[in-house]
Length: 256
Image 1 (cartoon, rainbow, N blue to C red):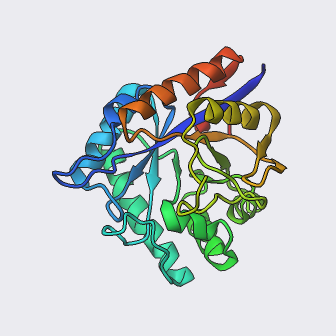
Image 2 (image 1 turned 45 degrees about the vertical axis):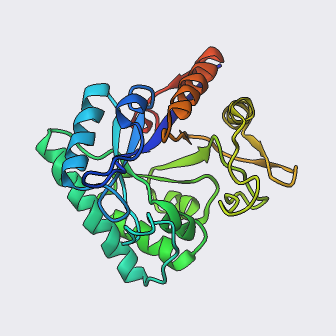
């Protein structure tokens, strides 16, 4: 099958002496990394180390900006203005880019985190602020956004490269948004079901919603999580399942 896709994961989400995730393991199997920039997780040493590991494994480096919500891990919605949204992104991207430059590499993309990600997927004012910020800062930076979202469409309309993202282990609503994590069925725990859904999203451009309806979806990049040993096995299996179908896995900069 003549199809190319990216496999991404959120990395560098420890903080100080606290470790979260199995970065050293999962980084060997993904093609792009979204690195926490200190506002929901991560710190200078973790940012520096994660970029080093990305370079060593040929993984695309991306910034993962958040609301300023370390206590809530960036998953609590905050009431911010468009000006604040743009400044928050610049602050965090700039910090990570300094470490990238110091190690002789550049940022491939950025992907917002948690509640910030979900909000700009549908909020026109904040989405416009994010897009304008990237247009003014670096037009070559790829925006990774929820497939079919408002911000994905807006960024494309403004000439930016967009990696439309799908989730291997999350349930979808009919409008293409993700089901709230607080609701039953929001997270798919059955490994085989998640792999089958992912293959369908990549190969057919379709996903079945939590209500049983089939909707269109674009899968440029698949998000996988590596928070526990079982998840590592899932990442390995999902990559193999895609490659067995003749699908090429590579960083988004290589095909967008």
